[in-house]
Structure formats: C-alpha cells, structure tokens
Image (cartoon, rainbow, N blue to C red; front, side, top):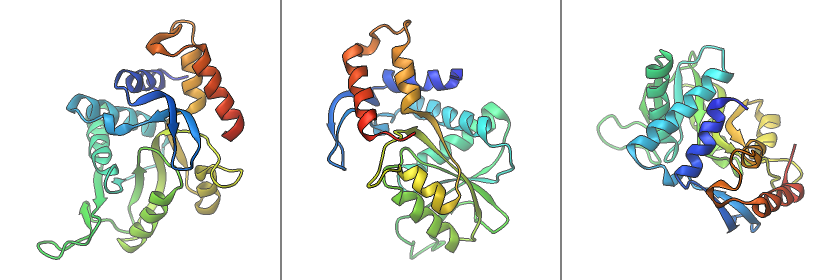
Length: 224
C-alpha cells in the first residue's frame, strides 16, 4: 500500500472520522464501521484532506484535466482544497467549479460558481463517499446542461466495496452505465489490511474482534 494511503487511514482514525461499533446505515444494514467526513471541519483537517485528494489524482490520472468539480454541498470544500493542494504540492494549476442547489435570480444569475465550463474542459469530480450514486448522476446531468464538459474521473475518499440493491456496488453499476473511472483514496480492504498490521497491534482501541466483525460484514455484503 502506498504511503499516502496509510497516512490517510491514520488521518481518519486520528480525526475520529472513521468510527467503529454498531451503526445502522440508510440501507438498514448494521455496519461495524462508519465514515463521517463531517468531522474534518478544521483548517488543518481540510488542508490535509485536499492533499490526499490531490495525491490520488496525481497517482492515477495522467491525462490533462482543466477543472475540479465539487457537487453541492459536501463537494464544495473538497474542490477548493484539492485545487489548492494540486498547485502548492504538485505545481498543477487548474480551476475549480461547483453548482448551487438553486439558480441564483440576481447578480450573475448562474447555477455554477467558479470556472465557466465548456465542451473543451476535462473535469474531475470530487466527493466524499458514494452510496447509491445519486450525486454522481445528478452531477452528470448538471454538467451536460452547463457547457457539457467531459467528466474524466471521480475521486472519493473511501470505497466501502459494498453491494447495493443487487450484487454489484453503486460504483460498479455507475462504471458500467457511464464508463466513468472511479478512484478512491482508499477502500475497505486497504483499511482492514492497515488495521491488521502488527505495528498497530490493537491501537485506536481496535482489536481482533472488531476486525473479525468487519471481515464477516464484508463476506455478507462485500463486492470484489
């Protein structure tokens, strides 16, 4: 596992954004872990989060791209933090853009904030997690109506690698239906592997029994 991925998992644990216990998900499933990126609300945290998104982009996307799109609302700070990190850490200067939930009826009266997108733009979408894929589908419709740029890839924080209503995950379904490439900073297999490391040895209050619960949950609901 690459070093920035290990650092990201440590960051989630230190920030208490990654929690362990019993959590009832929107699907009704009882999960032994839960990711709450809403805990990452300090200047230091959002700065580091942007750095991890930028590292994932640089690691995976070699094609040219012109803008980072963050869907309202959670994607807005992610887009700004990511373009900032791309510039300061990697010397890559690209635009950010995000949508409003409602069209502004005064001033510039637009739906979008930031770069005005065109068909010549290649856009990377940043979001926290994908559950049903609703936000991505909505973003595709928004972008088609706002210059119709090419959506090059989607970056998310954690891929739970979990079945949706069928046998496939939302990401697998979206990839098949749209052809989009998805790149998580880490996935649940990375997290379990990290927690099993002898050097951690029960750190953060996570023992063998919790790891076993995570693996059993993955056996029941996980996808490859």
